[in-house]
Image 1 (cartoon, rainbow, N blue to C red):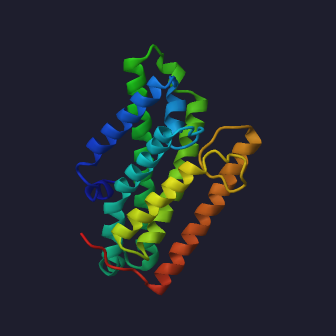
Image 2: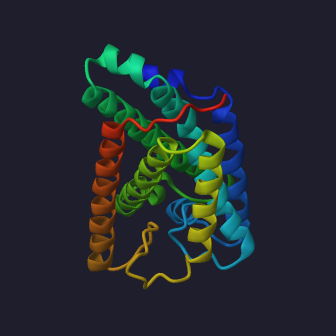
Length: 231
């Protein structure tokens, strides 16, 4: 855990704090006062009905990429050295993905905690209203979506340069924001709420997609098509 954090941009906590507070402030002034709803909206799980809501989602998606980039680039650029250090490619891959998932979990929890503190300070809500089974379910669903984004970023970094990946991931974020309204689509992967069956199917789709991405990463490693990344 300490090793993963060591390769994170030291300015990232400040960026995360500013971005999350700005998002919470706008959503609270838009009439959304439930911490779980604010959190879910930031990650596109609620309808993004205007340009500003779409922009908030894109901003959150990009901040997630910033949280992961330094760790991923370090692991990929030092593939040969780290493979020897860990003993084999499988252990290197395990360290790469585990580190990414740890950072993703930390990112998701921090966003929720910052949003929760914002709501407690600025709104008349009780802590029991914000921490319940519904909130836990929303956090878990958001984490699964963010894990897929992290695995996608890994796949792209193994093929393209850091700047190219940032452009591609930003394009993906914009596409997801624009297609957010089509929540009945079978390909919908954003962390929406719904019936037990709907949420269950979404979780199943996400797990299948995550497994497919891990398989693609393993295939790329076997071919050793890992490009150097610019600083």
